[in-house]
Length: 380
Image 1 (cartoon, rainbow, N blue to C red):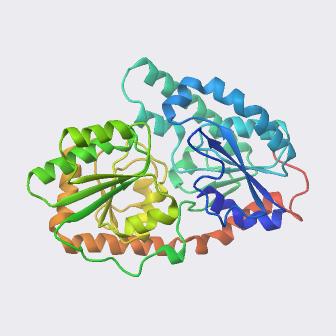
Image 2: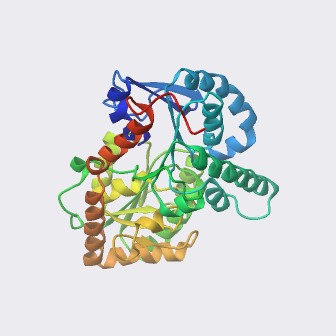
Image 3: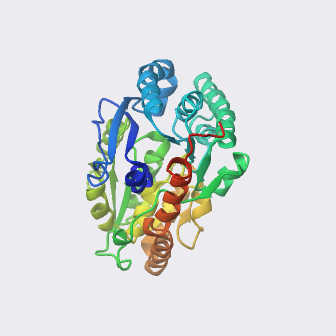
């Protein structure tokens, strides 16, 4: 949703360039709404990594390939908005500081250190090194918050961890639009409970725990269909597990979906499950709420701040197959509870749509980067 976060300011600023990570599987502009790529918003693809493990193994190579082009983009810019949770956020902010450009920091809802601690537990040397690097990044991020001309936060916990910087504004940048929200949660279309996952097909998303939970429920006689939407480094392993355990009749791999296909996909389901080991504030949570789904998640990142357990969602412990199965089973047997969760989630989505938040976001951007407020001076 980052393009949607900044695109409304493009006409007032005289144009914006979105520079984003891009791998060999990600052509320029992939995943962006065609309306977003207007004349006032261009797209610059930078070489990056396919997954987090690649980043930690090849960081020096990735940074070297991207730095020269990123430096030139920043040098030509009037101001810089950086998604700090992004793995290279501190590097981009440093370039902006060196080039004496106004800096706006957009915080994604969970610190790099918290996410790495969830993704890389234990005493394995690689995991220890990843956490050590993340701790260093965390210190850099606190410095960014202190020197930025403006900070956009979505999570009060992260705001406090970043030192409660004075120049800040509260936003919720993973939201939906009014027309995305369905009129009401629907009753189950059949005896079968339709469960969906949407996200990266990556081990730390809890994809295998979800598979094991559904396997246990179907073995006990529950009629459940699980559908995975997404792609990632563990897609092949997940597919092999489904075949090996003869779950083809209960589990389907849909593959990656663009947003115009994702929302219809979600609206065909009853329950959305995202049992991640680590998250910021997932966009798919808001899309699932907007689609009228009851949601099951893990209490990681900014999720506990925005999900009230038992009211507009269910929170289960990270890595617990039994708790995940119990949560899905409760929604299977208690239709009224499922509908109540879904309705409360839809109400939360309605209170925080883009139409309500975008005016404040644009006001904050213009306060830093556009005339008559922008005088070529910066706090850096």
